[in-house]
Image 1 (spheres, rainbow, N blue to C red):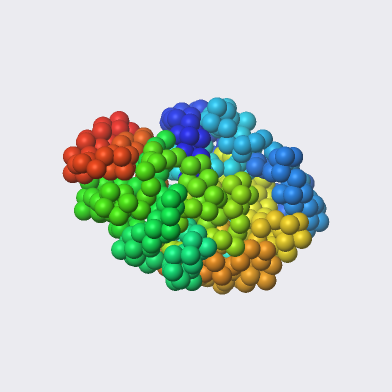
Image 2 (image 1 turned 135 degrees about the vertical axis):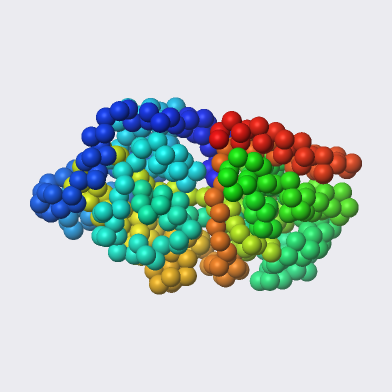
Length: 457
């Protein structure tokens, strides 16, 4: 999940209709034309979204270097980079899709892919993916995001899953082994109590409960326990379950019985980042990039933090982004796009995985993201490249890598932002009211969620 507010705006902007691309079917005809219809060396230009902005000079330099290297490999292909920032603007994204002004190769969040496919606003790239060398090695759960039946409509760029972020320094101070982080929620509770006992201001475990972030983390904990947010048909809520109740009961215990969560609640994204950077928060749910944000923006130090897999995880809430192709793109453009995406997003040692260059630039190397290949051969190669060029302590993330490799990733639910807003209520209630009635809170949330889901069905 990106910034919850941005995702909510984007979701609203992407209220796609069946008329998304108008009645003109010339685009789909172009996309489904015979792949070899034109000469392989004919000049072709493709516009590609999400070039890093000038305000991010290191990543921009790397992108421009890759464009030049790709040009040497494929002299007939010209990359027309587009650096609109942010890469997705909720105010213009849908208008660009519907109006046909979107880039040939456009950037998308996972949560929007299915809606775009349903509206016919992305090309079927199935006839062209044979040039993507490691396609069959990509994680099946990641590729499923871009599939509808047997057809493929896009390729991933980034994939992350949730884990438990923890302060290794505080673990040591509390007599805990930072190399053996908690694997169960009972162990999380025990560790949180010891950290909270270090003294005033120390919080053993922190959790969100406002601004849609509470519902987001409820979903992450629910998935880890084996629960579901919605039923198989997507029309009814499924979180009022033993697993959902366990999520809230666990938080209520840590907050009121153990007193390990501190008294300040109704926290949102930046609050926990600041607490973790300040050195007095022991644990929180988050993806590995939390550590990078804490280091870069909240005065933390990479060496002080570690990440492990979600406790008792049966599944993990994941997120990420990738690229889809404008349905009006010609076969030649689509073929060129496949070559570019294979080179820049999916090749170990190249493009985004050129860790030697990142190290030389002074950018952090060693975080276990993105995870596109799992434990396949390319995945192992990428892990080794990270280790060889690491600028952060890779061993701090080993528990996450070892624990998360076999965990099934699950996407955010339909109408995710609306559901998260609803679930902020029970999350905030158990953290601010000692007498909170969990059964009633879940029942009320279920009724509200069913109304939201019914409207979308």
